[in-house]
Image (tube, rainbow, N blue to C red; front, side, top):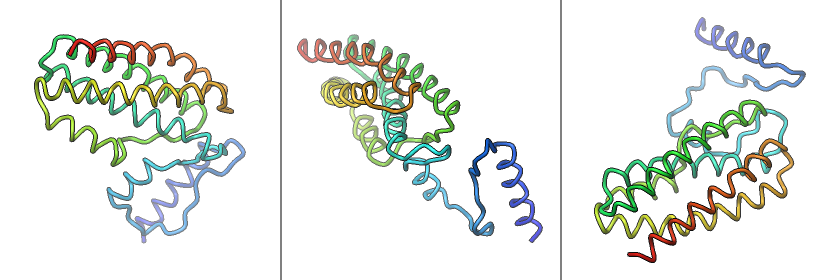
Length: 194
């Protein structure tokens, strides 16, 4: 009982510290323990913590998860690719997406938007598939994936830059478009040389 009281007090203190006129936390059953898988599921869902609708958070969630995957695969490419071009490409993606991920975290924090702490199941599977390969097999699969992925990303970022109702998210998407287009062009160039 003492643990429940302490948990409730902690939640109320967090709510009070974070209260900007809106209640952001409620306690329905303090004794319920959250399993790790439930926590991961919650972190990959559209979470609304600041009065912003879920659809406005969808871009942020997708961009965060995609950015995590790009960083992870970029690191793997540097260590396991056969081609110098693919290793350099991986380094560029790790650097650019790490920077973008940090900027996105800042925007999300400033706008009270929760972002996932880890990749969702789909992106985790992509990483597993890629990291099962090495050398030339990895190079070909990775570059093909990067071409496809960046085509989709560019469309999502264009849409967010034009339509997202959050000005900070809109500005972020517009600023990252040229970098994503550069990534796509470089991946296509590497693919042509293979």
